[in-house]
Every structure is written in C-alpha cells, then in structure tokens.
Image 1 (cartoon, one colour):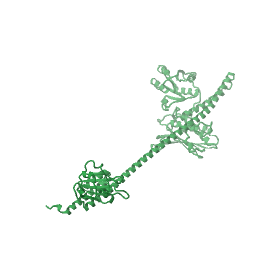
Image 2 (cartoon, helix red, strand yellow):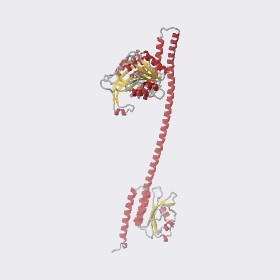
Image 3 (spheres, helix red, strand yellow):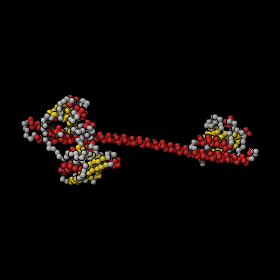
Image 4 (cartoon, one colour):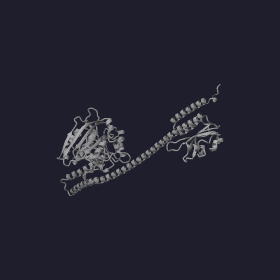
Length: 600
C-alpha cells in the first residue's frame, strides 16, 4: 500500500477540503445563531477540527486595550475559559498580533526567543501556537485574538495562515453583526422603556386632568346649589307670602264677622299653593324621583287638545303650526307630565322669540334598529313616538347647549326662572325610558326631539282619551264602601279621613304599617287601601301593599307620596289595581280618584 504521508500534495488537498468544510459549517452557524457565547465556543471547536490541533481559544480584548480575557475555548483545563486574563504586552505573541495586525506564529515555544508566554499555556502543555487578530470595523479596535494551540511542536504553513485569517475575518463579521443586533435590542428596549414611561406620564397627566375636571364639576355643583337656594328660596318666599297673606286676611274677616267675598281669599291661597306644588314636582322630575303614572297616550289628540293653551302662551306675535302624522303610534308615558313638558317647551320657545316667530310641533313614528342604536348608546333599539318642537328663536351657543339640561342652570335673570324646565323634561323622558336630544344654532333656532316608547298592547284594547277631562266635583260614595287610610302625618291623616267620611265612606285610620296590618289580617271588608309610600318603623307603603295582597290578592291600592324612591313603587311602574298620587293634591281630585278606583 502506498503511504499517503509521503505524498504532500494529497495531504494538502485533504486539509483544504477539511478547512472548507469547517468554513461552511461555521458560516451556517454564524447566520443561524444570535448567541455570541455559542458561536465563539463552536468557532473554537471547529477551528481545532480544521487544523487537527489539541487546543483553541478566543481571547477578547478588554476596555483598557491591554488585557485579554479567555472568552471561549476548546480542550482547556477547568479554570481557563471565562477566568484567565493575560496582558497583551509588546513582548508577547498576542500583543504582537494585535499591534501588527499579522499572525504571530511560535512553532516551538521552548526554543522561542521573541516572546514570553503566560503560565496557563505551559500548565496546559502548549508547545506551539498561532495568534490571528480578530479585526474590528473602521474606527473600532480589534475584538481580540483567535489562538490555535498544539501540545506538540508544529509548523503552520501558508494554507493554514490563509485559512485562519479568513476564519478570523468571518468571526469578526459575525461578532459585529451580533454587536449590532445586541445594540438594536438594547435600543428597542430603551425605546420601549421610554414609551412605557411616556405612557405612564400621559396616564398620570390624564388622571390629573380627570381630577381637575371632577373638581370643576364639584365646583359647578356647589354653584348650582347656590342657584337653587337663591332661586327656589325666592320663589317659595313669594308663594308663602301669598298663602299667609290670604289666610291672615281670611281670618281677620271671619273674626270681624265680614263673611262676604271670602272665597276670593281662599282661591288666592289655593292658586299660590298650586304654584308651589308645581315647583316641587319639577324638583322631583329633574332628579328622576317623581312617581309616574304611565298610560297609553294618543299624542296627536293630546297636542290638539292643548292648541288653545299653546297659542295663549305664545302670544299674538308668535305663530303655531302642527304637523301630525295621521298614522302615529300610541305612546306609553304619564300624560300629565307630557302635557307639562310640552307647555314648558312652548314657554321656552316664546322666551327665545321676543320679537315673534314660528313654533312648529311635529309628530312621527321612529323605528330604531340595533345598527342605528349602536351609534347612540343612550337609545335602545325599538319603536318610538317622536315629538319635535322647533322654534325660530335666538338659539343657543355650544357652551349654553352643553349645559341646557343641567339643573338650576338658566340664562334668564334672577327671579325669571329656576332653571328646572329642561332638566325636568329630561328627567321625565329618561324615567319614561325615552330619549331627549336638543339641536340649536345662534340666530337660527332650536329643535327639541323627544322619543317616547310606543305602546305595545293587545288588538282592540281601549285607550283612555287623556284630552277628555272629568269636570271637578265631589262625588259621594256608594253605600258600604270602606277605606283603610294609612299616613304617619296626623294632619294629613285627619284631613283625608274627614273628607272621605263627609262623602259617605267608612274610614279606618292607621299611623304605620304595623297598625294597618292588624286590620288587613282581620276579616273586616276593605274596598281600598290608601297609603303613604314613606312610612316609619321599618316597612314602607309598597311593602305594606305587597303584604296586604298576600291575604287580599284583589285589594286595590292608592299610594300617596311627596317623595318616592323608584323601588318603592316598582321602578316607576305599578301593578294592576295600584295607582299613585303625588302630594300636594286637592281634596276634590283625591276624592275623585278614590271613587274611580273603588267603582272600577
């Protein structure tokens, strides 16, 4: 057999193939991996495989420019890689390679006289070595040294040197790519930190803004309370003065025996009392705490029945026009409150048209589907009756429009209004599960749009025509009619029971629910329970009615209240056989309601 060792050219070819294979493997690794430690350690293993040596290492130049750290290696004893540091002096092979940029070769270090060698090399049995600088990019220092070591003396030929220089350059490019990659990662992390810091700063600024806005709103609420105490106190003082004055004159005339024309003073006191009652109703309405009596309402009939009232309210300089949909659906709402709302809007329009103009009241059907309601979160999908009140008045600025429904906010002079009109209407519409929207432009006019839920009833249901009012009169009771009257206010209890007794009713009185339950649990016949909603001692009027219907399921109940939580009357909706009256009310109206409920 032919000895290949005697054929140098054949051995050289094998070495070149081996080196090319290592270059390809390392190039693939360098492109695939982003771990510098992994690449450096694999570079040492592969270069040893390419040159058939025992040891290899990468020495990283430190910031001082004179110290080299053994960053990675293959074949070394423990305690070398990541630990050993050497000085790159001019009299060392490492220092020579760094300064000259050329490979430094020691074929046999025992006979080497140019360089001195670190002890760790001798401890690991190194006999020969070659240092190749891992160059840096333009204006950057070299990364370090690629050193290949052998435990036997050996020569490194031109092919070895060319391979190592190419290998070191590839390693330098890889290190530079990873440096850039690391710098980009660090930059991204820095940017993310800055974005996070900026986001936190903006969130903090928004929180501070929200706090400031909330403080402003609280300040505006305090201002509104000030307007309340001024406007309401002013109006109530005027009303109390009218009531007290009429009653004092009435008393003086009676004491003096002058009984002629006494009705005039009674009528004067009642008129002022009705104004005070209307003001308290407005207060309850804007706070959405008034108790509503929703019914099916023919809105067109209601508007037509109020035409004369509208025209008298508007005066001779303002025209009224109605555009009523002939096929208008029936609405479900409290008709009395709707009348009050429309009258208030007519008054507002009159005040907005001091030189005259045109007021248009228009009705139409509005079917809002899910897609349309999505754009208006306040409005649920469904069928609505729409009422539009349009005037050609002075209009409102955007600032005034933004506060139009705020309670106690008014642009009118002191004493000319309390600022409860629009807020009352808004509260009524919201409590009726409807929607109110206002559009206005200065010098063009204002449009108020009211959407009320349509009535969904059975075919053939009769709907009471609210425009037909029963003439006021005291109606006497049919024989053997009994009323249980419950109220904790003694004066109201005595007054109400006296009126009913005068009309022929048998009246049983109670001051609280506990006392009333004794009668309700007895076998005594009762036609109607009349109860205040706000009763003392732990059980309110609604709870009393619910308990009473356990023993008397068909018992009719009339609630009377001056201030009712929605929950007390079933969130504004009453069960069949239950009705409600809001204090204050006239005894004539009260007696009529009692008779209607008992006779129904």
